Length: 73
Image 1 (cartoon, helix red, strand yellow):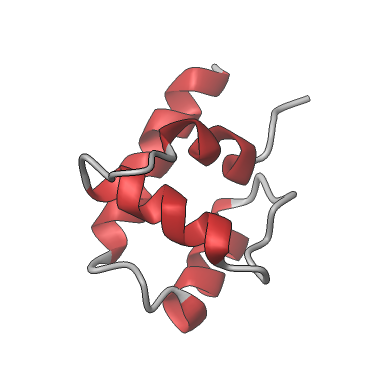
Image 2 (tube, rainbow, N blue to C red):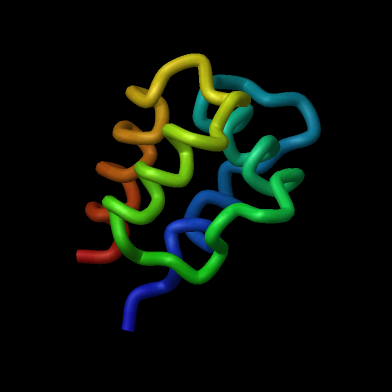
């Protein structure tokens, strides 16, 4: 069983974000409605398109997703 994307993303959380993925991780942590148990790209992408005002671009999510897939394979 894979760990959730949220669980994976939290390893990038830092007090002072160094890059866009760290900033994304910090914002997702603060987003109480973020789908924390999801492993589904479409569910997460749809959620972020509607509620991810903290993302400058969806490319940040796509980059993080690719890292997630690599780590889970």
